[in-house]
Length: 317
Figure 1 (tube, rainbow, N blue to C red):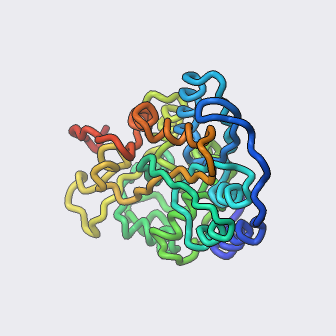
Figure 2: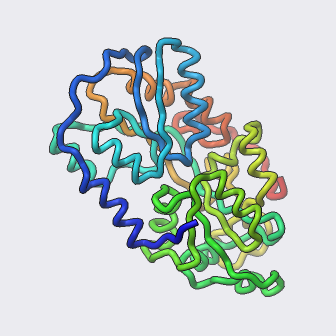
Figure 3: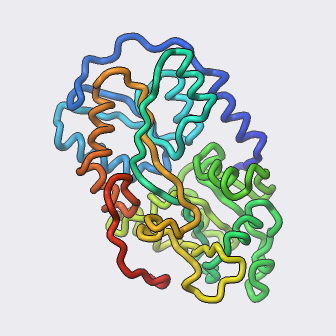
């Protein structure tokens, strides 16, 4: 693993703009909304849901081929800016700086909100204290808390190790922006190379706390999600500084994401720079339409344009 620091993260992000190509690629492939070939990039934390969308879309339209590359968020944005792809799936909208680059080219990217996702914190199975307040989470990620005994005096002594899937990932940016409020991550922060290696590391190290997209653990029918959940515990988080009941701690279940009670929520977007009604437009329409939104619903995330039926939940589920 390698250490993450805020300086490196920001420099990496800056490369996306420094290497921006002002020229737009030449004529694209002769495709339609349901035929042809398109290359897209997607935030790797959404691989399970994007794979499901592509499989269904290509099953319905046998002459459509969607070639996806899963990458850290910084690289996804870089691909979009450099015109190596026409379509991206990411956990944020474009920044003002990125919009300004498109303005220079007289291109207006189309943005579609497709889902509500979340960030899950995962622990080793031997770490039975699976509840944290939001303030405790903030103290861990800003380095104010570095030992498990600071969180629970009865806990086994051990220095906390924070682990991300990638130093340039959307989960790292989310923690920096929404939890740390731009304060740097502490020296005990590391990155693996993928979500599967992240889960394996947490499963093998009692003092680790991992950060992963909810999409990887939300679908209880998916074999990968099931295998991940067998290896780690998922943290319940309370927005109250002094919770009085276990019910005050919320886990990242679909219903709580829909209600907005789980605090580490984020939105998922398609950003398309396709200037005409090509295969990218067709695939975006499919994902935002009834079939695509039902796939998101069944995956355990919250679809953007379909109501979620809230049922009773148990924190011990």
